Length: 481
Image (cartoon, rainbow, N blue to C red):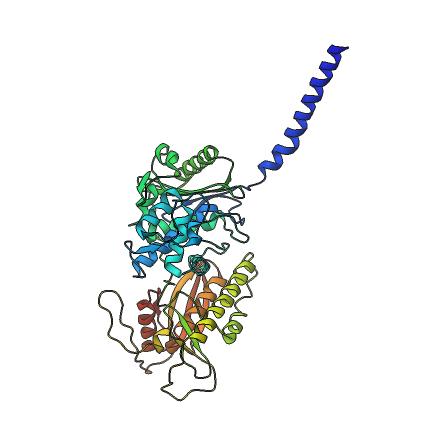
């Protein structure tokens, strides 16, 4: 009898183990959905994709955008790599992975950049965002504006570090696009992502993906990411001869399995991409940092004297003008998150402007106020001053009215109609002095949607392009015929 009881006990134990494996393991494996994309970095051509447009948690892949904006801010004189950043309590309190910064500590921006790029330090990422935009929320809004200007149509950032937050989502396609911009827009900084160790000021930090960098021939970056909700993510790039490939994986089950999958995808990319391809760099998105604000002046009032910020100052009239564009074409998939984010940005900016306006003294108007709302560009309301040599381009303010209205300007090519229309609206608001009355037109071509303004004289078109190019906005003239 005793032997039979032992045998029955073993059978029961085996049965319980089988039930546990059948039920628990499959459900735990579904915690982080899988997505992947392989892209020829030289042309942007997609070589392979799997669930590439599924919105998932990006984790620390987010820091690619944080670092991209840091490079942009340095290039445009907002700050320098030697700027001393004071660490806030908010930044110091970020959970690991972290550099170990203390509230009130001062540290150079270059060390924060190294810590975010190499160690993926969350406290360093938050400190970078606050140093550039004043608050993490304002920096997240700038991240979203920059993402949309790049064509990242299914990404919403809520923070600078990538820790899980409701609504903080991206896709394998969008992160591949971002990785390509990091490589080609700021090549002078790209070597950061291949450093296996780096001096971060307070200590030396090690790369989070040193194994792949050491084991895969040609690998030189870019960024890892992990949270429980996201799984093990990675955007990797490798170069062999004239070929460069980007591979992105969301939802890996471990560091080892993720690296193995990325290596497999990179191999696939090198196999499918031709040896010789004409380099078509993506082109930098319009600079949306300090000095590009659009100010709305209503009923003859003067604009508040605030420091230039990378925001768009809105009004009820501006929000109303956005509504027709917010109706996406049927061919554009799921743009509701874009519209919702745009509306959130406008609401938050309105609150900021109302607060500043209440505190700022009202200057004495020098001209008779008009009774109807009037939209001006920041350049139009700024007092005349001598241009700063070597950094700021001169903006022409006189306008010739001669010539027929058969000319236009092109302000870029975009992946979908919605993005092109949005860029046209923002450009029109920023440059009303020359584009007032121009026809906004989106032209579909074989490579995307061209955003154009038509119905201008030659002189007006030339002037508009000069003013936009002075703000680092891509622009070229379109002739008649």
